[in-house]
Image (cartoon, rainbow, N blue to C red; front, side, top):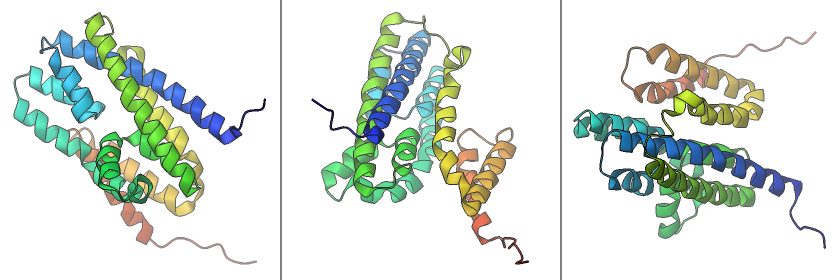
Length: 227
């Protein structure tokens, strides 16, 4: 009996499994760090289910542990403001129903959007969005549970290099899009702005300022002269 899955389906499942494994590891680090900060046990579970914001959660628990919950709220809002353009980009993929929009918005992460936009077919985009979104949400919470149970054993994700796993994955996903000259120019401009501003502005703001790279669309491009 032959499998009905196409090579693209198998590749998607393989990629989902790989990023889910990384999500468990980083989620475990988040759970462990939260416990190491002597925060109540319910905090990591509440954040992982109700917030589900990855890096913003690490930032928030550090500020909460430092006794500044108000700053944690504003920093989280600032860091996740990038989801506004994300939402506009994938709104048609999520679907028109209110239930789909509420759940789909909650599942929206950098990885989910990147995997979705890597697909060209609209039906595959929708399937990819929900598969990756549900997978990451599930395994992030499993990782959080493991981290809480293990206490401080997981430690800082930067120690194992886990903090670099998602950026590396995102770079791999967007590489095909960079073949387009305009896209490449916008991406490089945004990246340069973010890197230059990182040492001098609060966390989260460089990502927003990187949107200024879109101005590169309006720069005149050099055209090759015909021989």
